[in-house]
Image (cartoon, rainbow, N blue to C red):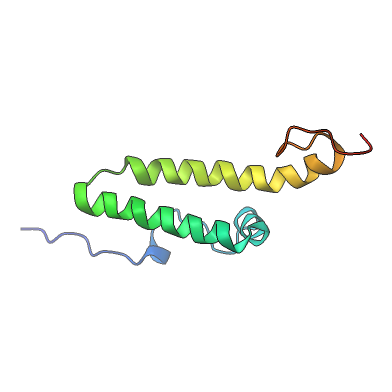
Length: 95
C-alpha cells in the first residue's frame, strides 16, 4: 500500500510565484489597510467553505477576483490622473 504524498507547506508548493514578484508587491503596497483586512476576511471565509463542504469554487472565484481587483487598482491611479474619475463618473478638473 502506498502512503499518501506528504503535505507540503504553502511556500513549498509547486508553481507558487515568489512573494517578491513585482506585480504582487506593487499591488499590495498600493492597497489601504482596510482593503488588506477585507482580503484576509474573504480568504478565511472561502477557506471555511472548503473545509466544511469540500467546495473549491469560492477559493477559485476569490483568486480570480483578487487578481482583477489588484490589477485594476494598479491601473486606476494613472487613469484618474489623465481622464475621467472612474470612481465617481465625473470628469477630473482640467480634462
